[in-house]
Length: 274
Image 1 (cartoon, rainbow, N blue to C red):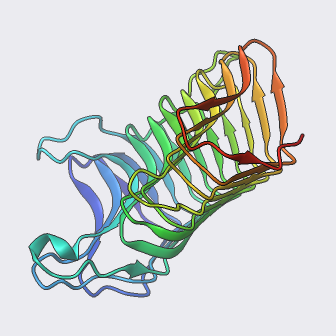
Image 2: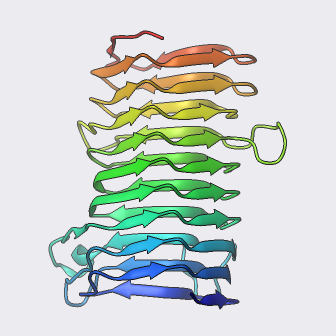
């Protein structure tokens, strides 16, 4: 039950062999980054099973005087390989039931070998991106989050394996009816083949570009989602991806040009309905 305010650096830094920690019921306000977790690139050690719950993060700085290139609410990463150590996975993290408002670049980001972890029941509003999983994150569940009014995208998985994105609401508007978010959900496979992402039962609406974009992400299951466009162009955009199961989705497009766009080669969209 702490209030941490007015910092130009990191408010809480978790690293090394820290395990089974809990950060809960705090207010983070006017900061560079709220909670930052990373592996120790001197010893090659990392942290596990960090729980971040019931906190409020608001008003992070857009720039940092210490030259760091990230800012926002929560960023967890594992970086053992930077000093020649194996990239040891950081496991078992839970980020749940937090509120993020106006946290500049990001709400929540998992970067590097963050595995077997959960992001659930958070409310995120007015950031550049809401939730990001990047650079070999594995077996992450993103569930029942509300992401609203982000300028770039709501939820993104990039170069990650086995992500489940289920039961989230991504709304491109915030306080008015003008679409703000560019892409609602992005599954970006890049060098990971197949990505084996599961995107199930989400509601995505009011995006400037696409409600969902599946890019170089083979083996994705996109099932039972609702994609509603009222100001953008595309409901579902599949590019350079194969063996996609796109089924039982509901698409409504009031103003755009395309319900579904298939771009480049290797596309194999199967079981299309809804």
